Length: 312
Length: 249
Image (cartoon, rainbow over all chains, first blue to last red; front, side, top):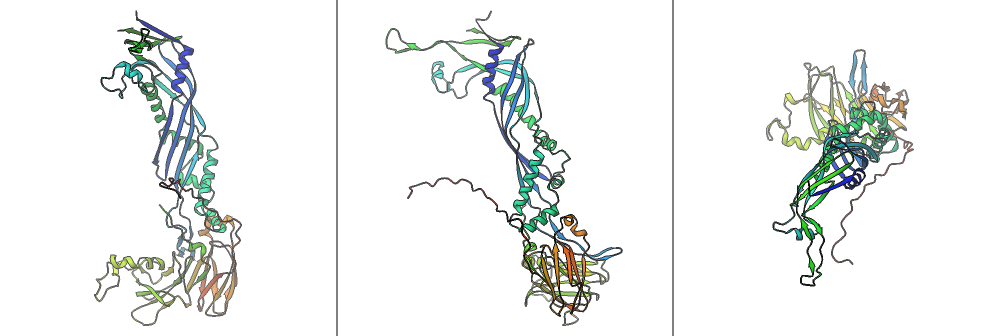
């Protein structure tokens, strides 16, 4: 029989889990070239909600955890096609055009525009199931030879600890589903960008060029080779092309499995705090009494998390 | 890639067959097979020379000569020229295999793709001291083709005669997508008259003057186009600069 047994019921375990969940912060940016256009993203997310279910098979299910996408700034770099005039037939013949006017293009090359789409403020759901595992942690910042009492007194403390992690067995995640207004957002952003590059021209010239370019939405579809559903295309760009789902799943796995313990216990464990010396100084204080923890185990039933350990 | 605006496309108000700028071309047919030398002038100043060949062996029915490109390339060509070395008798003569050619049944089209323009050409052969073609004096069968973009009114005149007329350009949005497919408007130009004297065209539509006797055709914008949209000012966000260090006054 273990020397120490600590149990936390499901509600308490939920509170412990919430503390770990609330320190989750995801911040990522990247860029890529996708043939006719370039794209980059800058993303920030945190976790909220979720229900914890301790299960009889020794696993823990955290269900309906919300990924709050605080920021999804997607920037698209596009080449507007050349805008040319001329090219009309000067001498038509029954067999075709014998002489054609040269085409004269308004720009020396395809002008670049860059549009930023602020897509943040959406939520995806995530479920993660795994087993509780223990890991012994020695702080790499702790100097060799530092005793356990000094390690306790440093700020932050550098004591060794037994940590409890949730080692995920699977993660279910909903794809990032951008709002259905993204089509209008993209159209307005490209329209503004085109206006901006033509901004120094007189109004009639802008009108003519935009007339030649045609409806902005058709222009976007042509440049990006987008099917009808822009919303789905942008979601695919984030989820598949950039692989954001894989990235965040990997981040969640590492976060719970390696980086952020659900809780921990100090080793050696202080069973008596430092107190003033009742026999008077010297010394003025009696050091804490600490007992080393060994054979640290964690498991759960369908009602509680149980920690068992021996005192060496 | 940084795109440079061809500003003259929108700012040119004068279109002169004898002083070519953007959006306008003069066309001549050189029926005699020969090597032709072209002198490009701005006013009285020679800015460049080049040559082309009219050859019965050529299948090419259209030769476009961009006067602006030949000017821009002039400096670089001195170094990269593959023609005969400096100091030799044939220096400056383009080797035959590099010389553009056109069929005697074809046309040579002179135009200006960018820049301030004001360019004319005199074309001749080494068989005669007189130019066989001078763009400041278009002759029978020569063509002057242009597109007018600004939706407003223009005057047209033949400066070698008394012909006068008006062109009114409108901007029907339905035509934007098919500018190149619009039928060009043909105008016959004699010393004394244009036929028709009043032309109505869409923005970007081709207008082709066919010279009957002699002409120097000048089209000039007489009104500013209506501008119902004010120019947009571009906002540039200035990055924050570090506060000045050291003592403050």
